[in-house]
Picture 1 (cartoon, rainbow, N blue to C red):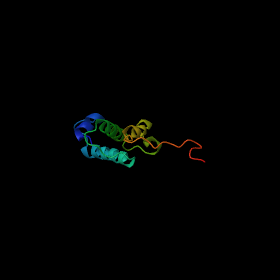
Picture 2 (cartoon, rainbow, N blue to C red):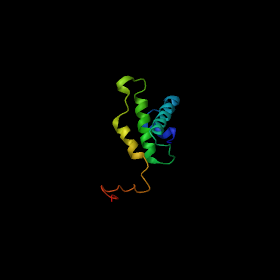
Picture 3 (cartoon, rainbow, N blue to C red):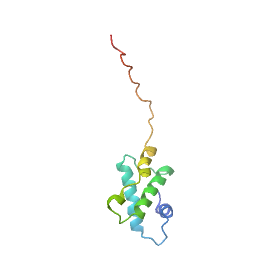
Picture 4 (cartoon, rainbow, N blue to C red):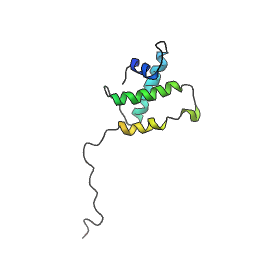
Length: 101
């Protein structure tokens, strides 16, 4: 998980900004990814980037509601980028008619 200082700079928030609000946005972003099946990863720069990106979007849109609060598609697509790739090859499909006697 990115540090608060890293997130504050990423979000473009000034040093006097409300740490509680920023922390809530950062935690909510990490929780959103966890709910999408992406566990928290310490030291993963790509994960930190996307969590900060979503957290900054939440910070910028705090107080917005309704349709204006939909998560942007590029954030949703990032879930695919962060999912672990298979370490084993998929099971081969049987050809049609194979095994028939």
